[in-house]
Length: 336
Image (cartoon, rainbow, N blue to C red; front, side, top):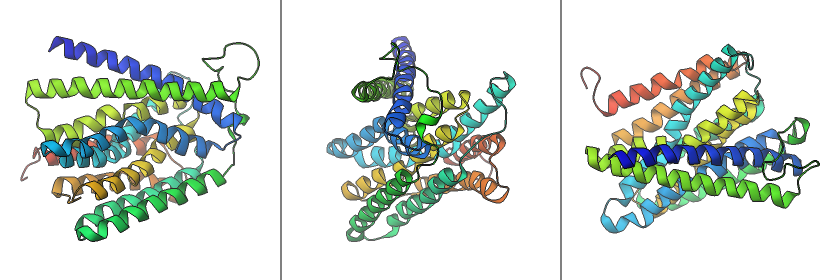
């Protein structure tokens, strides 16, 4: 048991190392390719840091089906990830803004590209709502919904890359870790470091989940809790740490785009895969997961749309939303 906890801590260090390599590389990739910060944060960083948990969900569905629990584990990992991003990741980001402001590393005022973030959140509402609604459709209709989700995500990528305001080269970037000499690094080295960062992230996430699984078996935690709660918390750590790093550097659009872009990806592509390889029938806990994620996101979207601004305090509300969901799932609330 002690060895499992030790390896769990090691995996966190590996994830942090991978995040640092990846964020540094992806910023340079955006500069070299002259991409806007929306494309860098919402697509490149978001999809890259989504790879570990996406692979876990796919493996659970495809290979776990032999043991009869692949569908449950896969669906739990798929739906749990947007919940973590829209609640805990928002909360961590808001807390990081306030902490760094307290340390006088930045101000508490967030500078966010409302067009970039607003587009992400609108697509999230659309694709996650479709993913939940597909649960009520007959099995033969679900592949059509899966195709629609892929099409919508492709449209989202096209619009994000077309929006090239605030290209990555406009801001000062820390030297590439793999190129400490003077002058700009070559593109192949930038891409190589980014790929290496993703590889380290995958290694760290798999190690984390493996040790978490061993601990859950020893402590008697159910498969449902592991798949819907614990696994997404573990595998969504890259998004949280990347966003904290960018918040510290006052790159708020990159920080939040990393989360919101991951929400769009995780609410479209993995559910599409789930619809093709599982019955995709969601129970009350899964549907409640969708509802809480949408409501938590709607709070931030409403403030940004109506005021218009985004404060760290509205992001902090994601924490209570997540605790409420836990209380409902485990029936801790009175009368449940």
